[in-house]
Length: 502
Image (tube, rainbow, N blue to C red; front, side):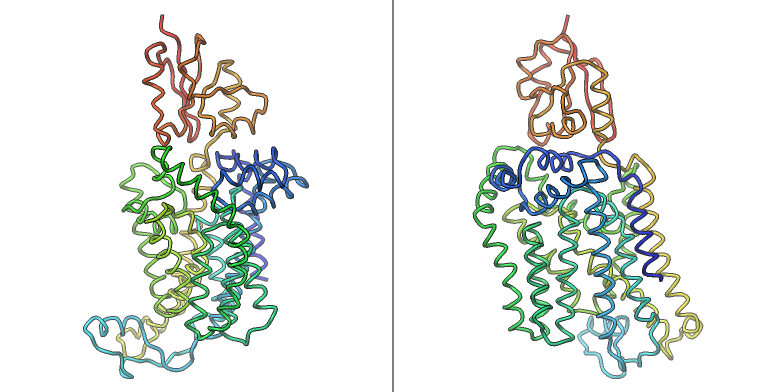
């Protein structure tokens, strides 16, 4: 009953402001499935994109049935998040079943010994008492931590492929863990391969998580299984290889021709690295002054990942699902930039489970006999449950900031398109950024900002969206003949009115 309530509430929460304006990338998704046939998506659109075509093909079929509204486009991501949450529940259940009964070694006992070069002995061990959480409680807490995670809430409302990939990888994670507790069966191995295949043809970055799963199995001495479980991934990469070669060539060209494209993809720098724990714990919310945001967000991130480290200490092999993709992504970014936190949101799957285990480890520490914590030991369950509910509450609070405060929503191209229509002026924008305007107003004429030197209108509007990324200095071109007379801001977007000099 509790599980059902959690998932119903998670679904209903994701309906809040699901009809908010599409932003640029979502509008591209909408326009692609509107304009191209399934074959054209593969042959004409995909070579110029940076992602596999499966998600677009799925949305093409979906929108044929349900239309092209914001809600229709985003519902698949909502459902994908719920499925992923269900797999987190099932995976946590498996891990909890494997918990050792008997002697355990506390992180707090062992770490100081290792720091000074000593090995833990039986004197540092403690008998495990009754579990702080029951199996169903631990599994449910892990699922709630995933479903309430503010970054998961945000991207489960986005018409992009990332939550789809997370859903497929959640099944891969579950299958990998299950293969360590039972003999490999055809059904289980087929499921691992099938969902690995789907993940790869949805999002290339899934490869890092699949590699983590294979290493996890190797460490459990499943060498033969690991080889057979690579088939789906190899098949997916082989099928996509002709397309991938063209995409890599186009990506290399974009890095050369678009001045700041490298920074958009995600270079290795301190800011991008810091954003990983910060955004995994606080989501896409940000506020002014920035120093206050970083103080609150940073402190909260330290709390969350402190417990994740405790959980990782307890389940060292399972922690590979969290660590390996990030390490591989970091290394790969030396070759091609990709170090943006949202590209790795699938690691929130294992993070949620490790976080639940880490909180329970706190309870185990409080239950230690002869530790001087007798007062706390008597209340360890209450304290541990309070900590768990506190973390869930703060996650929910960050999510609520995004859901209920429009300033944290996506770029408002819907309102912008309406305002532009009321102006009755020519609108100039970079040609690669027109999809949101055309989505909301298909008949609205937009002009190429790159040809602004040919403008002859008495008054015009410029939307300088992404001009800094492209290194296009439109002001130096137009300022000799025009002067800016006004500037307006619509959530996340700025547009300017210019008039010819008299």
